[in-house]
Image (tube, rainbow, N blue to C red):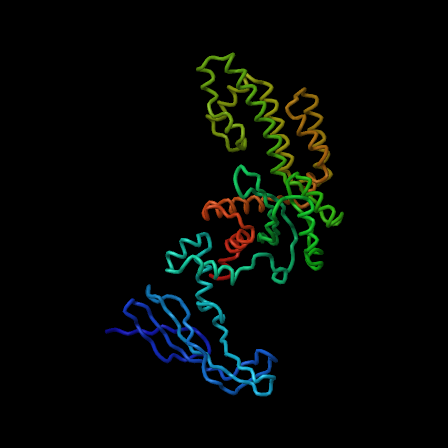
Length: 412
């Protein structure tokens, strides 16, 4: 029978015995090669042996599909120069005393959980659901550990609903540094006071590294950031939230015009304008010849919609251009003037929003920062919620977001 060897890769032990059980499990019995430990009462080094503790059984990484268990009886030491002559059990650094698994096996489970579910990992590894959750809780914090963060640069604030249709909102706080998104908090609710309390809790050394805060136009977020950081940090209203508003106005006009045209035109002519809603939403440069013909047909019957469409694209072009904040402000004001001169009423509400948030909207042009990274994370969170059949516990949600973002870099 051919034999090959695999290094155990566990430090400070010698293998005493290897056994293959009838169930097909591998049991490796080891003994410590480290002499002494530190007194659990006074912390001093002790070297006087005092027997052994109970046998510890630890799940380890599988070999060739077979479950592996490490058995070790830890050495106990007594310190006679400490009050009560305390006895301390030696613990080696490759396992935690109260964990039924080696550390490397725990990290393996966490890696398996990235983009997966507790239930799936439980089935694949033959572990109980609670055992997998126990590993998650032992290794992954339920809130941010500021000591692991060097700087913040750009903060993102956005909300998601834990239960669709129930308005059960939580606030997602993130940071963006050198193209990397980090989860900072999942806060219950979205009030200004809740967000302020968290922002004030950021250590001073990190607060000083914040250059900008990106958000939508929700005043609870923008006002909280302004009150905490003052004028030294730019508050940026995300350009894509702005675009959504004026494109919604265009879509509102489309609905009115299509309703009118259905009364005035033949069914055959209406069919020529099929899928016009999606065509109007596409980038002009990405339109096919067939789609351009659909627009020509539509605009022939609705000049007012053509005008609104061109104005929308004009505003988009402003945001696409690499210009300064001051130039952008002038061009947006010129755009507003064109809208008023056109006689169009569909953009009235949007223009009021522009007037109110102009400074925060045009802050985008300083460094062309958006909260696109927040939206990207929100999409990931939606996947996590679907994958895990809904997560209502915000501490658990924080753990799962953190693991999906950091798991590969930490444990791969």
